[in-house]
Length: 292
Image (cartoon, rainbow, N blue to C red):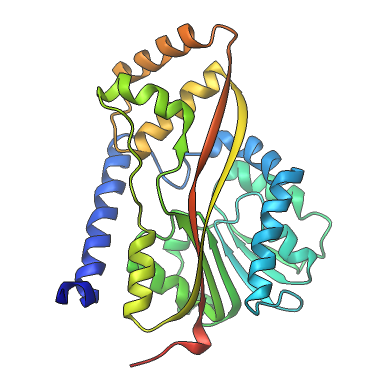
């Protein structure tokens, strides 16, 4: 039972699991920060669709309900993508620093912020991991640090670096379970010989360590989903990317298995993909931290 309250043990367990996952992805030729570059245009379209805007508004309304104010505030949006939150933050009167490194997403972000004043949104095209927070003048520099579904948060050390930038609030969202992807569930038995089973992710480490280290926070877990229609070629690319994220070999054998399956199962060449899962959101109140 003592181990349950041992923060060092939990930090090590999270780091070990994360290192294993990142190493496996690298060996499969996947860069977590760039693995969805090919989906930039689709992501942008979905983010700014009516459904996407409603999802964004729900999260922002939840933040406001917890006391976060956007007007005249300074926000650091880490992993800003094409501006799914950067844009509405700016629309509500915030000054936003958007950290994003994917070239296709930066291009879309630049388009999406073109109507704002030049000093309202600043893009930083540098990996957050490479930024020296103190040298950059970012120590407690932002009213809100916002990290939504970003590989930047992958162990407690990365969380501490994010928290270092926040003056009042820090928002982090992560999957609670690996997102269920209908095509991955279809091809999984063909590739592994086993039925697909969802696995819990690192959100548990984050919440437990915040608890152990005396932070004040609110958390929310929701179930969300979306449906897209893609070509056979895009489906193959996406399935291979997801296999890499699940630590399976991204090799010629698996590519051929999936390509043959798509050819037989979807003769029309169009594949409808359903993605859904449980997602955790946590808002940390830096001014209310219990230091002990």
